[in-house]
Length: 586
View (cartoon, helix red, strand yellow):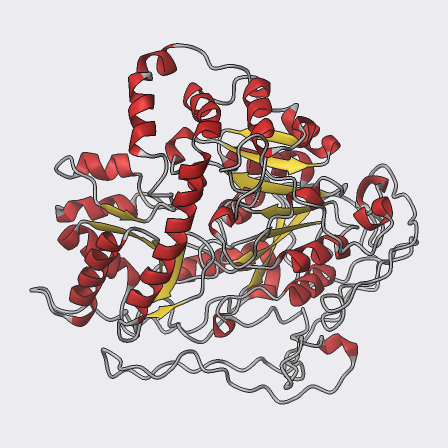
């Protein structure tokens, strides 16, 4: 491809350029796509032929109403239509969730899907970003995340499972316990956009659990799973009140005729869909093995249809991306503009083996100098060890999240420290759950965590060592003001800029115990007692179910850990269950 095609990446700040834009700037043929996380095996060629034969009718006439299309999808998923809202892509639903249900603040682990950070900031909300640690493989510790939410007083919590871009996975029982522990928040969102590709658990979805809770929304994708990003359709599942509130704001014809046609085709192609998911999982294992054989390249475990990789020391992601595109016609996702990541990381979509061999060959030539242009150039010395674009991103985080995430991206390979105001938990040397520093227990000396097994490096530069968690003693913590914080919703233009995380104001309502890192995820907790109904206006007090509802445990009279039975897919034995796993009898 011509060198000037890479200029398209400089003109877009939020994402890679579209495939249409890349095709227009080249000779008319697009590159091999390792960027857009799409299912390469579905729809089948026969399904595409059927859609092509009906193209004239599909694009000429209005679609049915969203209610009609939603009812057909719910019949296939065996979900009550009153608990479902379909949108023109997940981003439309995220936008409405933000406008309707996020009043003051939102917590989200980073790096993650950019709309969960960008959308609330665009409407003036406080976004509390919980940095995932490179030293732990970007795994999300739900106990530490819960402590962070309590310390910040955040009112909405988001979890992406699997997470984008690293593919990190959380087991269902842990997510359910987190949902119950956060029953007093205004809202908990579980984004399951990539869960169909997971195989670590037979039934990983919490859709059935979400419908029982007053403050939980599960977001799911159709475009990613069905390989049809261009159609723009997805759906959310929640209790009827939450789902109805979002559904009432959506246009009557917010879904297009292509979306309608695909939804009504699905019941005839369940077997092909299940086979496509199975093939993606096999390809993911094969692709991970091939990439792991490249010297200095780190591949992180993933349950999505993509792999998160760290380039060898000295390789600059934007250079690797541009050369793969211009020299090898391969498009990859460089992650320097993702908050919590840097340009040393790439997200690579799982593709068939023939494409993966082409990718590996291209990486070998670009990284290790077996092409006419030599090896990828080293990173420029900036004095901060940031890769391209990360310094600007770090400034953005500091401006929107106070001092808590300074140093979000340290030297490549060193991992990101926890926010200073949220006490860094000590690691149990026995391998158990971390114990919060606030618990008053003696803290062991921090131990450096190795980043990766020794591998031959392409350049003689020293590998940065992990930065130990800073001790609280040398950190000067400003004394909080004695005056209590007023309970009010911040105006959009007033983004809080605290020097340290403020403690939430004491509330007269009995507070629910915070999520205990060592116990809440290990043993069932007793069913909570009836709680006080919060006032109709203002923030919901801690420990009180949102909007006066009951927790799922109170509704069912259980400990909150028993799972609802899987109902499967109706009338089609070949369809996978609601999480895309296994076979369900009709």
